[in-house]
Image 1 (spheres, helix red, strand yellow):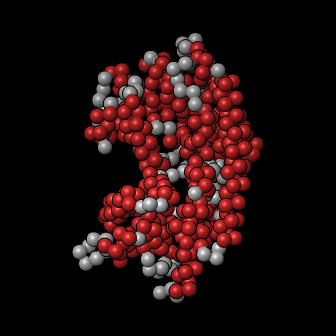
Image 2 (cartoon, rainbow, N blue to C red):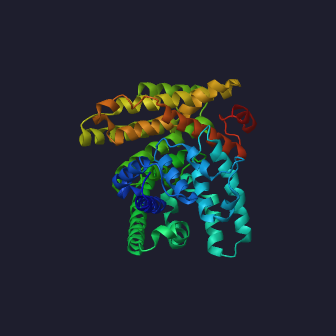
Image 3 (cartoon, helix red, strand yellow):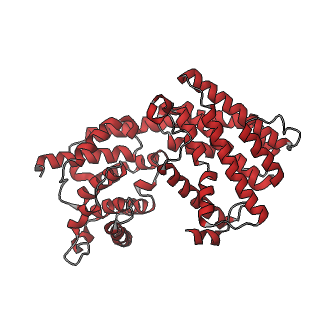
Length: 427
């Protein structure tokens, strides 16, 4: 068992990590964070109160460590219910609620914790007279850390930073005022730098999109390059990834554009020719057979991929064309399958729908593009990952497809996406 002094030091380190992550600054301290969490994993105890234990559990699990939720069993009574005295520990309840958001199948105790903390914290917001406490609890319930994007919430977190830290971690922050001030100053600088950088990037992406002139040809298609850029910002938040974010946004933009061509504009015969052209990666033989907007899209896609491939070759010494060609061909093939289903009124089975839908989500194109842009080929172990489908990527694709289709179906039924009530059966 760790000494009391070491336990206290450990919790203080975890408090620092929590503050850093809430302000979206983790990429500045990632090596230190990794080393601290690795050390924390090897220490069995981490304080004796609910706040400390739940905080350690959450930080370790979200970092990918195999920590068991049974560590929270100490806060249950003989009847297997969470102890009644915890109802007065608002700080511990907030920490436990945050931890409960990382449950996995079989974590019954976390499912119970989620219900237990939600009900009590909602009741606290009705009874408390402290406006700052009420606002903080409501914000936590609506936007738990694990389901928030630090780059989007950092400014709001900074505004409420003092209240949050003093309430959640007061015991461990006493006497650390200089450190807290330094981290706030860094966050302020980082937010200002990010705003300048992202403004430059979105301007660049918007200019590129305008020069494609696709918005003039396809008025009904989505034209939201700034919104699509947010995907890249979330995937690559580090300040030194500006160029990669811009290139990745171009790939995401084409995914949406081609999806709209298949969903809204193209007839099956035209879409078949379009897909064949992407599979061959040429359009000379079908140029006269395709409508203008399809020819424009093909040329823009080919030119963009060629420019990206040349840039990667110059920078890293390898040509990713084959990887990117294969990913785009696979995506268009999946789009065509959905188009033919709709045209023939074919009702796919659950297995058919999900197998194809994971690909049509675009996730494999995004990951293949990231693989190339980040130059993962320099590692021989990663050499064949560009077009492979590891489980972690497939799971992301499954979530994206079902979530996207369910969300779209609440507003309308897209042309080639299945109706909302049908998707409920699949889930």
